[in-house]
Image 1 (cartoon, rainbow, N blue to C red):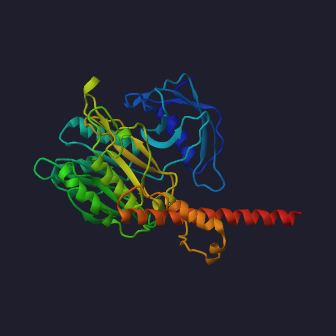
Image 2 (cartoon, rainbow, N blue to C red):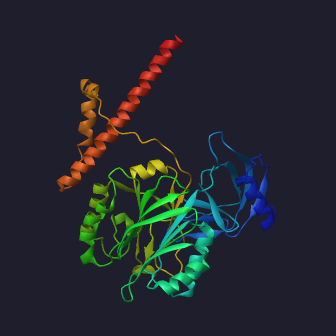
Image 3 (cartoon, rainbow, N blue to C red):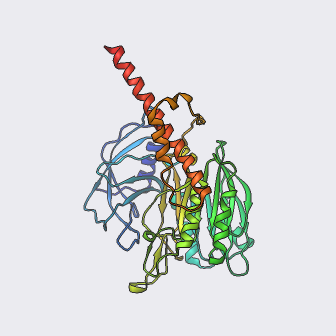
Length: 415
């Protein structure tokens, strides 16, 4: 299969993303790096060259994005587990799809990059940062442990073509937070500290959502109070909230390889926070671990310290959002990326308990199911979680009853 030059690739890009969605027949191209294979046994991502054939490009009736079907030519070598593929045009990620024979994927609305850089004085770090920005074309970049002050960071911001910024200076030679963003996205700073920058984000004038860029306390003595108070940042219990960054806690033994067992107290503080705040972890494609001690053999340790946490309301607004793990270069942390595939506009529907449900035995069984899990000692956590579970179970149950009733009525009418 022949390789295509940048001009041909640009033409394909314009044809896919532009106003024309005519079918395309078996166009092949080869790029380096074109495909990203990840989740090896040693959790180290790698890039490989491969050939991809576009079989068709069509625009669904109810979508502003085209669906593209592709096939992969040649042998594929994957080291166990699942793998993700990232397709780049002109060095910028615009599609994501998973290995599953024939694929479909859509263009991304925006990206957010978060990275604990462990100091920005290293030329390799600044080069890796520039490469990540070129690849993912993020509208927002969050950097922690910059160990640099405004003047240096402003020069770097200008070089990477960002318009706006907010900084939290390091304390001595440690810490330091940086937030850059571009035109087209509105960022309102709500609160900041040495451990976070709390914001409201709004893309193209859409309804804003809360995003907290996090650098969890590295010192054990500071962790408990921080995680006990973090839920207070949430503006409204029903608001859309996303947290991204280095949490500096391993929440489960499966999130660590090598070294000593995890600290169970720290894990409990983190899990208690997610329960109280109603947050879940957005899976990150590309590997199990986001930090390593950069050693080999018996001394090697790897942990999942960097996470993306989202509320149910945020997930409903961005149902196709994905997390991506980028390669670790010049830092012992991997950059993590949120890609948003489109904004799902929904009219907010309040939960209302219907008194007629009390006449049905199944209603009581759903409530009992929601209150069965009382594994934690904190009664306030149990109450919040069980109330939330009760609402979800009753919503699903009532929705299923409504669908069954409608289907039954349709059958009677047809007869």
